[in-house]
Image (cartoon, rainbow, N blue to C red):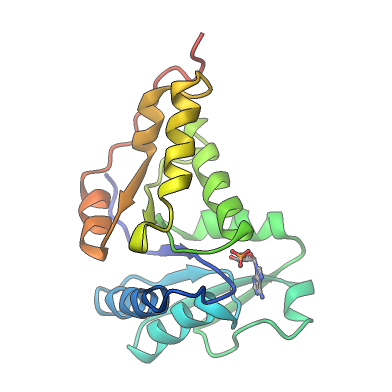
Length: 192
Ligand code: AMP
C-alpha cells in the first residue's frame, strides 16, 4: 500500500440529528491535523463539511477545498482554508478530489455524500484508481447501505470480493488500521 498523505473527506452539508456526527467529525479533523494529513474536501462551509474544515484548520492542519463555481457564487464556500480551488462542474470537482487524494473517508451525509462514495467505489472496481475508501460508520449510520451492497453481491450484481474495496469502520483507529492493511485486489467484475 503506497503511503497515504492527503485524505479526502466526503460528508453531509447538514449536521444530521445525532450529536455524535459532529463530535466525531471534529475528532477526525483534529486527528488528521495531528497526523499531518492534509484534508481534501468539497469546500463548503455548511454542516459536517464546514466542521471538518474548521476542526482541521483550528488544530493547525491543512485543508484543500474544491468547490464548483456555481456553489461558491451562492456563498456556500468556506474561505478559511489553506487552498480553495474552483471547478466548472461537479464532475470536474470529483476528478480533482480523486487526483489530489490518497485515500477517502466517508462521514454521515445525504444524497450528495452517497453519490461521492459510490462514485469512488465504482471507479475502484473498474481500476480507475486503487485508493482505499473508508465508511466512518458512526453509530451504525451506514448499516443499511452496507446491507444493500451485500444484497447486491448476493443477487449477482457484484463479486463478493468487491466488498473488500471499502472499509466499514466504527472508529478513527479502525479507519487507519484498514488503510494500513488495504490491498486493492480486483476479481473478474462480472459474476456470470
Ligand atoms: P449531502 O450529503 O447531500 O449534504 O451533500 C454533500 C455533498 O454534496 C458535498 O460533498 C458536495 O459535493 C455537495 N454539496 C451539497 N451541498 C453543498 C454545499 N452547501 N456546499 C458545498 N457542497 C455541497
